[in-house]
Image (cartoon, rainbow over all chains, first blue to last red; front, top):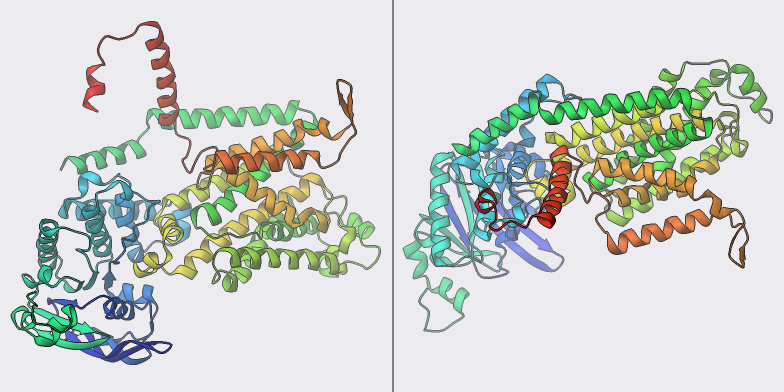
Length: 258
Length: 378
């Protein structure tokens, strides 16, 4: 049973082929990393899975369902959540508010009960807030619930974005360079955090990373792409010694060492 | 655990009968008392200004919903107000008045023989405006920023042109005269309070958070499963419903309407009021609407001839608008967030200001040797 299946996905922007015949599968509960140099098409693949772009050709299946070309909100509703490389928090809402937006797609009450403050809505709102606080509690963000997101330190903002994505109750979580801009200790802490949520929330995680060493310790499987093409795939140890990967990262030479 | 407790305390405070809630209810009762007194004692001129305050408050609050909270710059308010105004006017006018009005071409028989009470006429006006909003919003809300502004402005002009040309319904540029003056303070402020209540409830709800998310970042909002078009149309339609209601109240207040009332200048006024009050602040919109309407009347004398010492200034019609523009410029230059800067009035906020003033007086009289202990903790 695969949870995510990409079948010969191609994305062209005019003359540029950003992603070329990309095929892969993710099993439920897997933690898989997608790495590659700048501009290799990693984020484009995420944008294709989450519906921001439509593939030029090829198919994408989530849990056996064809999601090729579906709208992002529909795909999110099916259980695919994501974070962004450049943090995209809602600055007009506090930390809890950001998480509550993530829960909005699961709201049952109609807008009319919300705008007249009917009991069914009030009850749901109270439950949403409790659930949101529980989630923040589980991620050690509860003490910041009423802060503005922009006042948070960078690492906490990253965590909040993950919390917000988790609030949509996803089965597949796409993390786009969660460790970007972090130092070695911070990114190590974040990787522990990712392992923690992988277990706690019964997720499948697909993770983009620019630096190889960050994911080496935690991801059993790594896919390396360059210029939109898979150049290597497998366990960290194999990837590390793959000549093509070293060349892609460092150029052709003999001084490569991760 | 501590944070969860505070959350529960917040919940209790919100639903229980607290200090602040008592203050709110008391001031609402006081305000209703004032309305009753004003309706019975003030002269028609002052009543008209107070009614206009409420109508502009409705316009500003609804514009804030669509722009301040949802981030969609729509300049179609004048058009929706026209739909509400014409509908309510045609439904409430007496049969004889309609016959007197439509001398070029007779009114279509469907409308010629009806004379409705005010409430259903307002509601139908609002619903028709909402339907127009839905019809316009559907295609237009795909556009962003300036393009949406231009498209909605264009639609609003189309509605006005229809009003000019649909002789056997709108009576063309002759307009409608002798609309019954049903609007009083209870109607206008009653609807203003309903509008504020509904919009406030909506923006504080999950749907409101979704609207703010769309305003802040459409891509992130959509990736979190928010159906962009549906939510924008929700805000747009609700907004146009209340604008239609405002238009209906306006028609039955000024008793004469013609297409010129609903030129895009009306939309600009609404934008101006909302910006001055503060984007995303409903109290700001209401306060700015009241200040704007009252100032416009207070400034009326400067349009008539006056003299400053030896200089004689002839009466210049439209001088008030020049001042209004200068005021708006000053707000945009020096006070960009408006009067309330996106925040709402709250009793706690008021007490905090009061406390600060008191503290300043206290410090002025007796300078404390050491800062109080509770200040240090914070």
